[in-house]
Length: 168
Image (cartoon, rainbow, N blue to C red; front, side, top):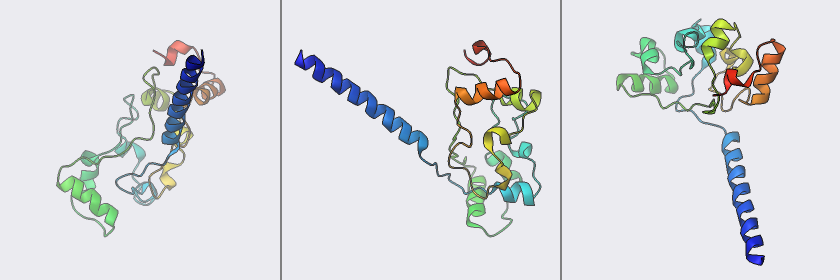
């Protein structure tokens, strides 16, 4: 009997440890390979979000721009910043920029940027914040991808909260 209690306590400890480690990973800030300045590109240069995130209105995933988009302007050096030089090197060497995604939708859920942005006419700022003012990439999610946040938004806008709409 004592061995069973010890074993159960051990299992509880392991599960608690896994949950704790996962929570710490989810809370940790991500450091991107390039300190991308949204404010410079959007506010100062006047580049629309859709120019870089080209699939936001047509696909499920908005896309994180890479050298195919960055190379349009950064095939040659424009300025003197060390971050722009990094972008230029990736483009020149035809090497993909290893961006880290901070937003992940669980496999059991279905999310479409097209349905929310193009059809639902929602602003990107609702979930991502005012990206156009950021001088460096976000390190964490602006709005956590949690069912509670999705349900609240759907209810506020009188959109279906039927489980089968979003869960496979």
